[in-house]
Length: 576
Ligand code: 9MR
Image (tube, rainbow, N blue to C red):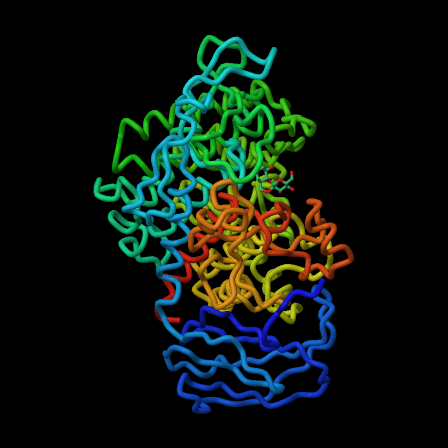
């Protein structure tokens, strides 16, 4: 199988910030430098120079050279880079490149909503659909969902929230980290010098039904999931009261395509888990502090849920989701919840200032341990979330502690810069096969979030530039010459695995909306379609834009939340 990878000169197909880094990678036979030219839309040569040989790139197996045209800063559209007899896809140089990516990436969440009709007037008629899973036949949920047999003797109203990904499951751990990241993108506007609170994240900035309610729209979107997460808590008086059920999804896997409102499967609540409970505690604590100025009653409800969840987790510290409970939905299993305890204690401390939470978080091995691994953070490893918030959210953390926590973020960012410098495609992810796994685009993006946070803490341009280079990778500077974000670039992913967007099966069904991030190259090839097609692929080639390849080409809320954070950060870099 030979994918069509287009011109050998690989650029960010969307473009570059005027004052930011501008790098490209050329796939070539040449081992000595060659000339490059930057051309305007009219064809005039506006800059030129010599390439840098990089040898064979581990992740792609390609012989490559890199081009740095950062010194050219004039805004414009339709530039191309010409080198080694090839012309790149066209791109812009503009300070406002990322403004609309911020809103597109966030818009994804509204279209993923469960329990509400999606309004075509807001997002285009092709995405309009009936409310899913509100107890209207043929749906069997989610207004009164029983447990799996033998798990509990009650039913819960767990309507709402976001569908996790291409399936119709709703999982507290993944919903939790995605919500965290939206709330964090908002909270960043309170502390980061370059953040513009009104721009992009304020009221009337997103196409959501609540856009005129005087609450910042990103909080409106996060609340849709928060309300669902709160509903997943075991009611008082029941066994394991205060814990959160791990997940709710179909009894059996369904096929594609399938409109959520047409899903006939019974829905089931799965057992509570300590990990889900601590995710709820952490994001409910964020909710309590961030909603206080807008809706005191909701903030109080969140605060109470956070505390009861945390206490319940301490009382039941080792209830793990089963790795075999994967029929009809994903497992999201995890047998190390020490990081969830750290994250929840950190968020509760930041919200309440209470000494007990400070004691717990400082006693955690994660408070001083290494929480920022080379492969980035994700749903299974959440200590980084606590660390990032302790570094950025004002609190009564002792000054020496704060300094140490902040230094750990910049040290991690320095390591990600080192990794990016070692990669001919410039991304902050090592080049070995183990670094290209299911959903790695989310982790690559999360490494960029750490770089962005390091920039916010220090204002050192190198960190911002590292975050930009991660976006370059996602938007086309890669071995496949593809932008992994639908609608963003000349050649983009558009057949991501989803029951809702199945254009590949049915031409009347839409492609995913602009701003949808694919999971990305995955050397694990855990779906039959990609393993048949791509066996033996070099890591960066282990991706196919086909709806059948769920392990390389799904959409998911946790990946789009990372993209939302990064796009929001980049949109704020107007002076770059
Ligand atoms: O993102 C998850 C990835 O880290 C796991 O390796 C994979 C297999 O367990 O599951 C991914 O999550 C999927 C979830 O289980 C079900 N909904 C779709 C998610 C994205 O593919």
